[in-house]
Image (tube, rainbow, N blue to C red; front, side):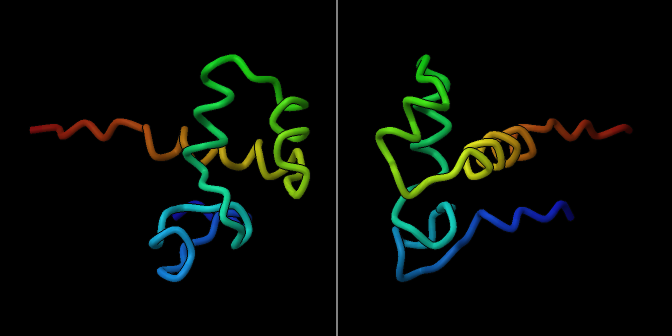
Length: 73
């Protein structure tokens, strides 16, 4: 299992969704902003509690989730 130290899951925070370092900032929001053309600098300006490493790990986590597992018969 890949470890993502900046990605946290807590039922008390955003219903257990993947968030950045226990904050109420879901990984999906960060990844979506980048996907829609925001730069890392723009995301950091909108969420001053984030660090660049948080954004990079959110993107890595999204990539890890999207990996296709092909079943070989």
